[in-house]
Length: 97
Image (cartoon, rainbow, N blue to C red; front, top):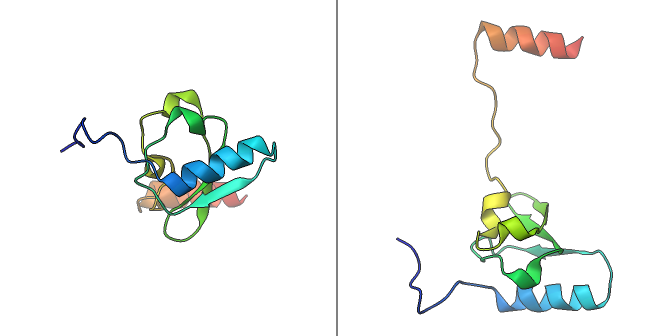
């Protein structure tokens, strides 16, 4: 179920404030955040945000196509390990060579 339109998107005010301050200072710093559910707004375009995935902060460069999505969509929480089998073992030995 999506969020009510009358409420508007959830945007973390402290995160937005940090992004605006970093843009004013013209320094390319990574703003760290744990707010994965925060929606991306047009003010965030061009900023690099370190989104926490449970273990580390994954740097995400915000571009215009990301507006309206959530920050957590761009920082995967699970690492995919290959499925087992003979083909996987053959590929693994080829990569080591």
